Length: 85
Image (cartoon, rainbow, N blue to C red; front, side):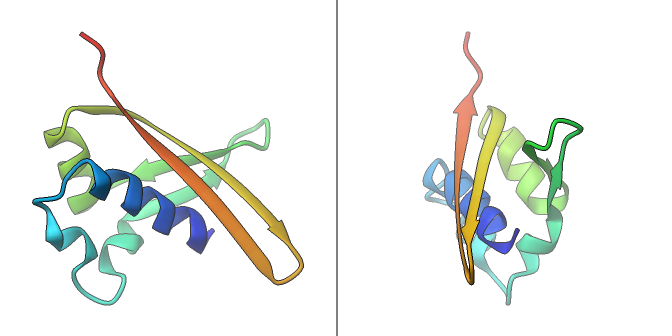
């Protein structure tokens, strides 16, 4: 799930180039990102702390995440969507 947390940070960061603190400190923001499995088995994201503040300030409305693994390797993709007006 580490790969998913990094993908989430990158998805938010790509929308917030003026927020360098998302990467500040040995993985500190990653502790404020929870990846969990829904009842259907799909991965989902729960933000708290600073990543949640940035997410809300940017007007983002949804984070989608996908995780895959094979043996010792894992890959993840995250997409951050803006609210539609």
